[in-house]
Amino acid sequence: MKSLNSKLLQPVLDALPDGVYITDAEGITITVNKAYEKITGLQRHRVLGKHMKDLVTDGYISKSVSLEVIREQQPITRVQTLKGDRKIVVSGNPMFDEDGKLEFVISSVRDVTALLRAKHAEEQLEQILTVRKEYGIDVDVHTDKAGVLTGTNTRLCYKLAEKVAPTDVKILIQGETGTGKTLLAQFIHDNSLRAEAPFISLNCAAMPEGLIEAELFGYTSGAFTGASVRGKEGLLDIANGGTLFLDEIGDLPLSLQAKLLKVIEENKFLPLGATRFKTTNIRLITATHHDLKVAIAEGRFREDLYYRLQIMPLDLPPLRQRQDEILSLLEHYLTHYAKRYNTQKTLHPETSEVLLHYKWPGNIRELMNLAERLVLITEHTEILPNDLPESIRPLMTHCDPYSSESLKQQVSNLERELINNALSLYGSTRAAAASLGINQSTLVKKRQSLLATRNDKS
Ligand SMILES: Nc1ncnc2c1ncn2[C@@H]1O[C@H](COP(=O)(O)OP(=O)(O)OP(=O)(O)O)[C@@H](O)[C@H]1O
Image (cartoon, rainbow, N blue to C red; front, side, top):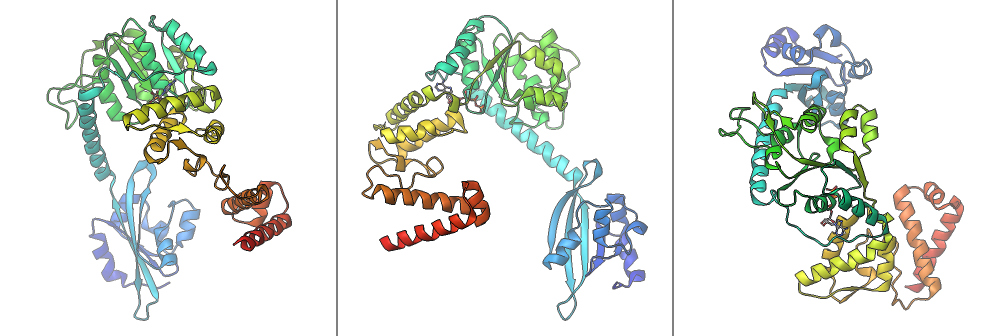
């Protein structure tokens, strides 16, 4: 182990406000300073002479920046989390001797927990102000009256919704992202006795805990640093008399779940910083794409709240289970965007076929985005399969309905593409062959002969 002149060096290191950790070129600890002991809680005598690898194995530290520096032979900076959620920034620097050989690694360690907290608070405040500004413009009363299309699998859901809309029964809508949960909530509101009052929607997954709390419950003046002097009404106030739609309710933090339960049970809530409860009269509709039963089992969601919210559960199936709606929706949105962009578009039957069998992971929102994109970028009136983005027609590149190639050649093209796709996905001929259900030698032979056919052609 190399040594530094520690008699001289140690007092200097101990006077520094940042933590310092020094190892030799092998990763053996030479010294640490007092600030390091204070920040990490690790005593010097525990680490001196120890190899960084052993400190990681023994659980003293989670990851060693010094070892990374030794491996990479260059400076490296990492943010690490210590016990109790403290955040530190570790910057490791290599020191080389005159011959360019690594001699020491000197790492500085800075506790940035307080700094990050301040930054987080600042960002939260900024977000509150932004959201407020947006709400001032268009959130109070939702006026988007896009035509609602229903097929066999959604008709029942909309029928039930229509039936219970005039009551105040609490509804939990379940469905993947983009399946139309917000539209259904708006439909219920529009068909309720509260239709003239505001429909307010809040996505619980989109905001940090502090911000959701301030938005939902509002706050009094001086409730927290940076709060407006006049305080602010919460959405529970703004939605009074109308409907509050809480999207992604499964992401509502546990502390706020307790507060929401009080609103449901007693129509009461306490704004941040307030000493008196306020009352409100809202109809609550919630939505989730998570399985809340799993969240309950994992302790992330209150069971009592779940049973209060899902008195009337409504399920919106994903678009791939609503095949009879896909073409009507496409036609509806192609016409809608064609009108907006002053053009005309239709789908070639082959294109309809591809889209009908596509899985639509982003559901109706994805379909709308695709319709707009196709209207904008397709130059001809009839949209062909090749106009579709690659992600939708991964194996369609060579299936051109106007192709002059023979069936045999087109099949070879498709085979070549399937093999190449599997090879790039799985990386080895053995794994690619297994994924295609053939043995490795067959794949290699097929690939060679397909390459030869292509070369013959060109
Ligand atoms: N049945 C339908 N007919 C026509 N358009 C629909 C239908 N359902 C949904 N849409 C449209 O699809 C888009 C996505 O719907 P919406 O925002 O309601 O989905 P969501 O499930 O709430 O999504 P997220 O979970 O991501 O918030 C909206 O623009 C909506 O108007």
